[in-house]
Length: 129
Image (cartoon, rainbow, N blue to C red; front, side, top):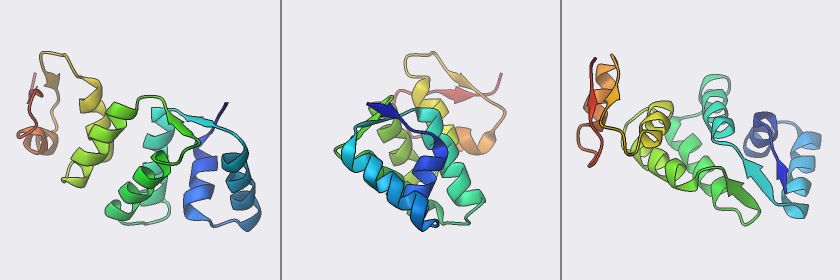
């Protein structure tokens, strides 16, 4: 198994450099790859921020990538929750943070948008300090 960096995942999803994209496809065809949650977080940010892709398109691409047989995620349950919550309107980074807080009494933030977005999520309490 080989761990991949954000730039590998971005090349695969954006397909904006023919040579690097082909190398990435070959890597995924020949090896199992490990993807850290931080790589997914950074990839989402790069695709939306630097590439200007729509949030829904980025989430769909990440979900499809995560489902490839050669891909092993660091924390697949956390990523699944975060993708679902983000598709429902929450920011992806916030959703990853909140999903990681499973089992905590509360997730504490000054971010009112996050608190509002998380209000209907069972088992998650978000509040100000």
